[in-house]
Picture (cartoon, one colour):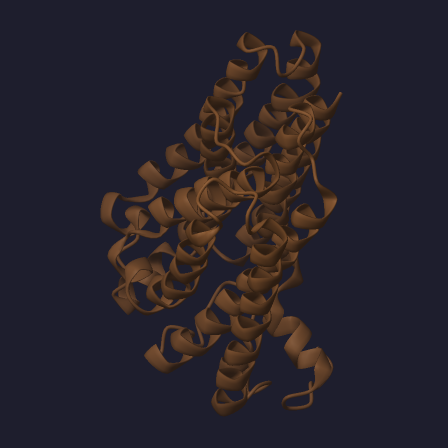
Length: 303
């Protein structure tokens, strides 16, 4: 790789991890598609939710980069993509400023969203302030404490499922329905596949670092079948929307079923590789599968 100047624009782009923004956009897209299906879609709150989600994702990436470096988790035997602080691309002091800047940006977007919705929401919008504070607090708690205790998968369900899908729908439709709860759970399950393949790849290094992920706790076979099970559960739960009439039976075939086929193929390749840096290709395939699922399911809602 070409030498990267310290604290350069290129370094910041790498630290932001643009590929991870898929996980931030999919829940907002799903919540907005549901709002559209319920004739409640509003483009301004939807765009503001997307900006807030992306800002918080980048801030979380910066926090993860800095604190894993300070904890010594990003060692020479790291299998995943290189990290900015560990490689010296961004100094810890600059990264702290970057974290503050992204959090301020996200909070300003949140305030704009609050202004848009104030007086329209049942409780005046105060609930959005609480959700915003939770996002900021847990962005720090995840890297500094909770991911080391094995809470990562649950947090993905909450902060990439229930909060963004439910929040996006809520600021447009001003209510929460059973469809939203199910869609939130599905999004969380699908996006958790990305965390699981990360943890599957890093299981030996995480054990040495004292990071007690579920796969470190329960072993490689558990991680292998957890990855498979998440995708299967997400596809099967999508039948709920056929039952409620939100999507046509044919749409179930070309949306959740297509995703499930891709997911199973990726799982087969993951099991064949089993360990090492080659699992980074599975990370890319998983991200692609997530994006397909989010786009196809949202399209099914809209049509």
